[in-house]
Image (cartoon, rainbow, N blue to C red; front, side, top):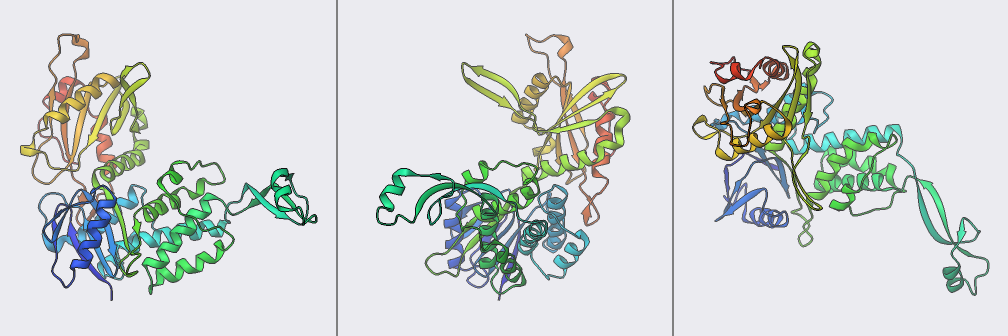
Length: 437
């Protein structure tokens, strides 16, 4: 029988020899070491989770690592489980046919976060199979009874001195045995193994029947880095993103065969950034009169020496018009609570450079609201090499993510409104108590 443990990010999980055993602890420690100790810190018979959220499955145990804003009660785990699924969906990391149905099944414990993720992957593959697996040309070398393609003379002589009826050739083959389908086949095989005895394993095995003519392969990080999409393979992109997390975070237990580990975890800092941008991108069309356009992670060179270059890349850049002039504003998302509701020196220095390099007069650190914090704005002091025309500043925005137990569907519109309302640097310096988003 499968067990599920739910914890919040930055919390401890201690060995109790019933739900979380020494064997589970040892397997997770090895898995974490293989990934550079990124996911959690290890203590004496306990682990402390970092900023990564999602699910870890080790054998028959599923560990859900949930996000949180500020102090939350243990009974709020059901709420934050739904918030995580919805945020992944809204940020484009999960495709769900029915978000309401997913929320209901999570609350009723019909399935876990792990099953939600794998189910999303299976649905993506099913849609690709329905449309037809993509075919590509590939080179195929072989000793054939007919002359096909180009004769490979050296191999032909070595192999066929006594078999003059055969030809060693190199020829083009147009079939479904390509890297895209090989990756999907490998991920489906992992789903079938890690979900043995469940309906997901059955669905994965049914889909594998469509991949019988595809060569089994072992994908690596480089495999996904080399992928190039075109109009025929663009439909694979979402499934390949899901497959990448499944394959690269799967570690089979080659000794016992019963404690395979698969960790599907998301850096909460990156997820929050993706979510904020996705909501802004959805809502920007409602502000056509301000010509609002948002961009994610635009790079700019800020240092170079010969062939060496260093670039900077703010999370979000917003461009709009106000009072008849073009404006630019920088947003940097932070999934954390600022100490004493004040920006850190490192964050301010970073925003200072963003303003100068991207020509923005205003930039804002965007935090989730966990207390009655008020927005604020401050001006940077002019340096000895700066002119008055380069006066600029940085502020802090605290945003409300939730509407009850769900994500606020008006979040993007409210934040867009806040952006286009910043008329001048002077009016931003003392904005008073701004309305909450």
